[in-house]
Length: 140
Image (cartoon, rainbow, N blue to C red; front, side, top):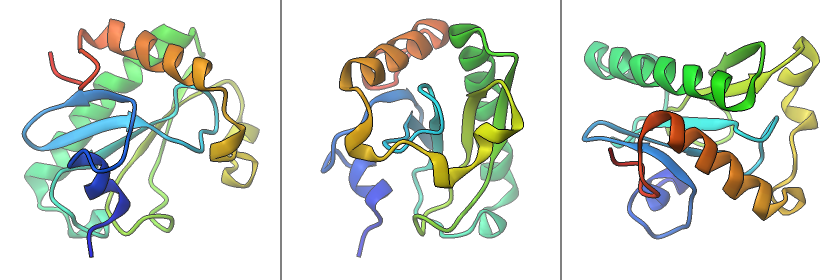
């Protein structure tokens, strides 16, 4: 059975994409720690980041660096956090997050999917895309 991320990548479920290439995609988390919280996900469905081949791992991190810089600028945040948790979806992914303090790294305090403001989510995606130079599908 496909992971929820594979369904998003294949267009079966909606997402706010900010980046896409032949190896990975990036879209906003529906349960963000802060608005702008993005997930960088390999297209190939691999459960654990430790099972990624070195080239894919390196590419995901290069993309996360670029997205992290865009997030920092777009949200004027002092830091962009980078988290690999790995328990919520069995499909490797990393979490670049705009952040101001350590307390914001607590997934137990993330917004519930039904508690996010759709307009704020749309605005966050637009702000990140503007800094990345990508369209609504995440393509340059």
